[in-house]
Length: 404
Image (tube, rainbow, N blue to C red; front, side, top):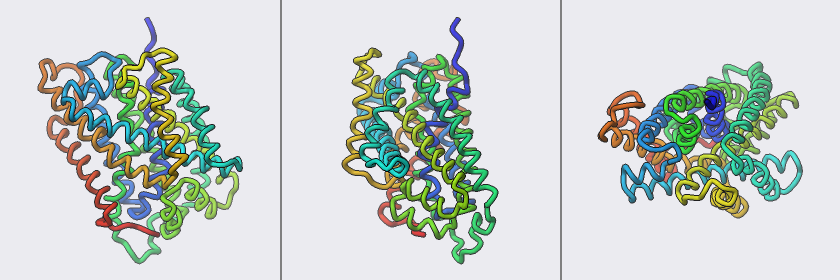
């Protein structure tokens, strides 16, 4: 009998999908809300997004292990809703890959002194190979990357943590204290920070059943939450709130955030550890998101699991975001915000609708069920709708914008 894959491996895949966007986007997105309200926004988002992932698992239980969003949504909710969902899934996956490719190119340009366009191309050609090869290869590299991230994170964060200044962390030096309104504009980025949902079908196929996949999802979101909180506390305790102005002005780009951090950290070793951690976070998320989009594309277009079929899936997954990154590089947090608004469709609204539909089916109450009953379904949909509305309001200048 074949041994079931480890929960650690699955949790690492889920955590690595989450962590890149969140680690590098949240400090700038939460600069207005600052410490307390950022923590509240992130924790609330983690709970809702974990439950919505379980709702997807509940809907998938009626189908064989190779299906993904496309097949299930089309069967349960019809072609029109499925087409909207497919567009949202591909848009979010594509814009996240675009953000990672652009940011890694900028960070590598600073490290290697080579043009960011060349480093972006090399980054994609080298690291998308793991996704093209197999889920097992992604599991292996994810565990290695998470281990490397933990080491550099511990070193970098401990270097920051010993210098945390409580007056900076809780911004007691500022005259303005109305932080709560800024948390609304932060929610789309927080939602993207837990946007692992395109990997739910991959997890289910990987474990061959729902309960272990559920545990891996929870393990992954808990790991991500703990890392986010440690990271935010360390940054907000060192880099004063009013010094986020230049970072926000540049669209929250990772290279600008890293140079701002470098200017307030005395130790070169700590700065190098933070830079290495950031690069590993980008890479792990790139591979994790790439796997989810790759499996989604294979199911959507019915590409076979052969070298030729996987190459087609690879091309549709990675080439459009790479081309867009080379032609139109723009702000990291801006891109993540767009992703968050669109992600509300397939990370909150569709999973809740699928779970509701699943329960009305014959045998729908049997087997795996997400907790909270129909009340939880309503709450998850409401969270998604309000998050999208907040993003639109922020874009139209109807929410307070923090400029440093």
